[in-house]
Every structure is written in structure tokens, then in C-alpha cells.
Length: 192
View 1: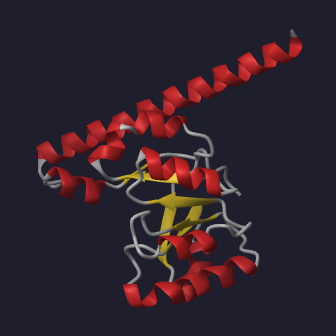
View 2 (view 1 turned 120 degrees about the vertical axis):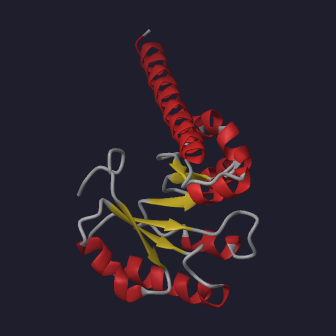
């Protein structure tokens, strides 16, 4: 199985379409993301949770992440229960900001994958990346474009989204360097 730290292909699968889970794993993607959020209608969200948990209980052969509904959603608490499954490789948090990412990271054993798709999240990306229990930052270009009034098909919109991508990359690299320095300092303290 590929390492998710360097994985490049992540395939979203609607949580209410269990017949697609194994096919998605067999596709060769580095991970599948079972989606409880945008791909699932409100009346199918409970069913999606049941299907996802049944699949996770079957011992999936690949990396599986869940994209839960955002922390302000009426579905968040029930999604949080499903997010505790030990077979999960991570949980994707939509509309990630510093507060909700910190809170989710403290509640989960698996890593959080913050989905940065708001101006607030983007402006605090460095702090989010530095939190404990974070796997990788993800960029949600559709919602971010809508919030910023960008036309992603237009050159100016593409350039702005490229700046957002660069901001996440820079935040991630800085956080990785800080964690490395913290580990080195800890090792020095132990040997002193």
C-alpha cells in the first residue's frame, strides 16, 4: 500500500453507493474517500454512515478516509461517531478552520485531513498545519472560488487559486520543519 504522506490520487465515493467502495479501491487510487458530505443527499446521510461502517468492518484492503459533514452541520455529531472506526486512515474535515480542526484532532485517533475551502481557513493555514494529529492539508477550490467570487475558468481566477495552493504548500512545509525541529530538540533533551 502506498504511503499517504506522498499519495497523489484520492478517489471520492458517495457513502450511499456501497457497490462502488471495492471498485474504487481496485482502481489503483492511493486512497478512497467515502463521502458523507456533498455527494450524499440529506435523506441518505444515515444510510451512508451504515454502509461506510459495514465496509470498514469488512476489513478494507486499501486506505480509506471519510469526508464528514462540516462542524456546523446538523449531521456532524453522528458523522463524528462513524469517524472513530479503527480501520480509518483519516477523516477529511470540510470548511476547516483553526477551531474546528483543533477540536476534531483532539477527538480522533486517526489523523485529520483539513479541507481548506474558506477564506478564514486559508488565512490560518499555517496554524492549522501546525496542529497535532494533522495528516495533510487539502484545498477545496469550488467552495473557495464561490466565497471569493472567483471564476475558476478565467485566468485571474486560476491565478488566485494557484496562490491558494502555494499558501497551503508553504504552510505545510513550515509546519513540517517546526515538527522536525521540535523532535530534534526533544531528542537533545533526552540525551543531555
